[in-house]
Length: 451
Ligand code: ADP
Ligand code: MG
Image (cartoon, rainbow, N blue to C red; front, side, top):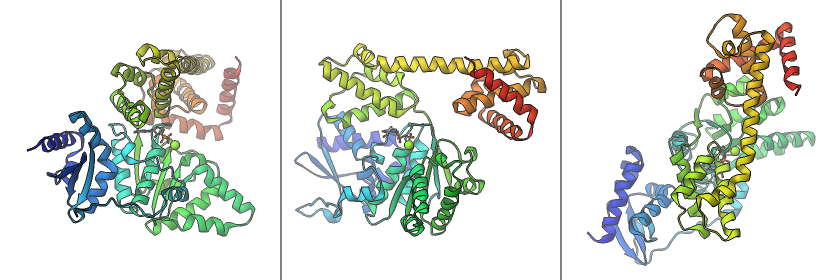
C-alpha cells in the first residue's frame, strides 16, 4: 500500500464512524481502491452514477476535510465511473446557465446539503430531506419541516430544490415564502389575472413553501393553496412545507389544510448542542477563504457557548469577531472575541431580563387577581380555584411571547408540552363563549399593561 492508499483507508474508517451503517454500506464501502493519483488529484472509481453524484454532492467536502486533517495537505478528490477512465478525463460541465436556473426556481444556490452541518438536532430532518430530494414525490409527501427560527428550515428546504435541479435541470422547482404567495394571489386576483396565477403555480414539479404559519388568517389564499395542494399532490408532485410549529398547532389555518399537511411526514429541527455549534462555526470558517487558518478552540467554544438558540445569530457572531480582529489588526483571542461580541451580549442580557420579569409579572398579576399564591399557581393542586388561573397565566404567556409550549411548561413546575398546549387552547375556546372569563382576562391584561 502506498501513502495514498493508507490515507484513503483512514478516511474510510473515519467515514464509517461518522455516518450510519446503511449509508456507509451503500455509499462508501464499494470504494475500496484508488485508481490513480495525478497532480494532487486522487481518482476513485465508483460503481454507478448514483453513488458518484451522491458523493460529489453530499460528502465531498467531508472527505476533503478528513484528507486535510490526516495528511496535512489539501488534496482533491474526483469520483469517476469506470467508463469515464479514458486517458483524457474530462470534467463534465453542466450545459445550463446555473445563475439563471436558480433564479427561475427562486432558489439561492448557496443553500446546499453539503454545507449543512448535521448533528443530533437535525439528523432526521436532514436524512428525510435528502431522501425526498433523491426521489421527489415518492418518499414523503408533503414533507413538513418545523422548528424555531434560525435553525435551518429554509436552508434545508432550498437544499432540496437545488439538489433536484442539479439532478434534473429541467425540473420545474418553485420556492416561495408564504407571504409572497399571499401577495401574488392578492395582486393577480385584483387584476383578474387568475390564469397567470394558475400557470405559475400549477405547472410545477416541486413546490417549496416556506413559513406557512404566515398564511394564518388569510382565508382566501388558503383556499387557493388548498386547491393547488390537491392538484399537485394528486399528480405526485413533491411538496415541502416549513413552519415554526407542528401542523396541529398552526393558528387560523383551516383544518382541511393542516390535515393535508399531516398526511405526509413531519420532521422537526431542534437547537444544536455545543459540539454541533462548534462544528457549524468551523465549517463557516473554512468557507471564508480569507480566514482559512484555524481559530483557537477556546474562541470557538466561547462563541458557540454564547449563541445557543439561533444559527443565524451564531454565524453573525462569528463574522463580527472576524471583522473586529481584521479591522483592529489584532489576534483572535477569547478576550478580543468578548470585546467584539459585547454589544450583542449586552442587548441580549437586557431583553432576557425583561422577558423573565415579564413571565414573572404575568404569574404574579394573575395570582394576585385570583388571590392565590404563586406557589399554588405553578404547583400541582388540581382544584379549579388553582387550575383556572394557572391556565390563564399559561395562555397569557403564550399569547404575549409566543415561546415554545415546553418552555412555558418549565415555568410551571416542569409541565410538558401537551399540558400547556391543551391549557392554552382551552382558554382560547372558552374566551369565545364565557363572558365572565373574558372580563377577568381583559382586566388582567389591563393590569399587565400598567407599568
Ligand atoms: P430558518 O429558516 O429555520 O429560520 P435558516 O435556514 O434561514 O433558518 O438558517 C439560518 C442560517 O443558519 C442560514 O444562514 C443557514 O445557512 C445557517 N444554518 C442553519 N442550519 C445550519 C446547519 N445545520 N449547518 C450550516 N448552516 C446552517
Ligand atoms: Mg426560514
